[in-house]
Image 1: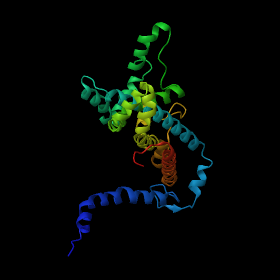
Image 2 (image 1 turned 90 degrees about the vertical axis):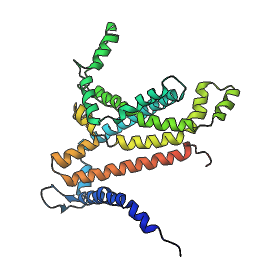
Image 3 (image 1 turned 45 degrees about the vertical axis):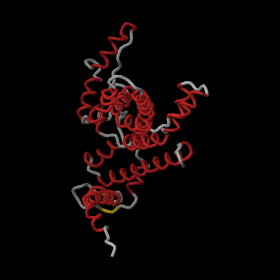
Image 4 (image 1 turned 30 degrees about the vertical axis):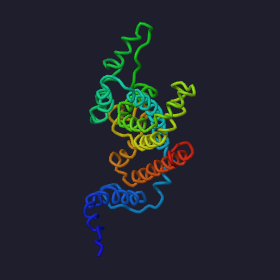
Length: 294
């Protein structure tokens, strides 16, 4: 008689099942329900149908936070991808103290986000920050001075994008793993055919690690669309809401204004946007991503 191992397997994964139900399924279900209600946290939710979603059509602040979030996501993902691929290629080459350099690139990503944001806020200070001090020291002779990072819409967003590059370590590690999987024979054949380094990188390296690029871009979209702690600490959403992002708006609606119903509806829209973008990237990837053996 065959022994059924299903109950034993379910028992082993029961902690995950319980956690998934308590911290994912139930909160998401409650958020969906609250999105159709008028809920102030202090009183019972009152069903209002699609009123919260209709309200979004006249919400000018919502358009602002959507634009800011899209701008930050696009800039940080593009620049972060280029930087992480470049670092991965450099770190894949044999060099002295290679393990140290790899650890140095990854180490910043394990530091607490709040602590790093506070350090960068101090570093970007227009008068006493290290960033402007370095700029003034190196190019001050040419009449160039460090900008007022948090006093300008452009420079405030630029400061946040540059700060996001601090945590490219995990992406670099994943790219390193992808680079190790590229067959050496392809490089050797390309070298025999007269391909230079740049052509080998464009025509061999990038296509072969395209599944890794796809994965990192999707993770980057998910993270960037939910950015919260960094702008809250560094800029507070200013100046003039130039760095006021979607997750900050949800938080303010829920806990500053006590409108949990509208905040829940905003959260549902945020989830939908991330889902649609992810599916869109996957569809594009079916045409441009190369899978060996597929």
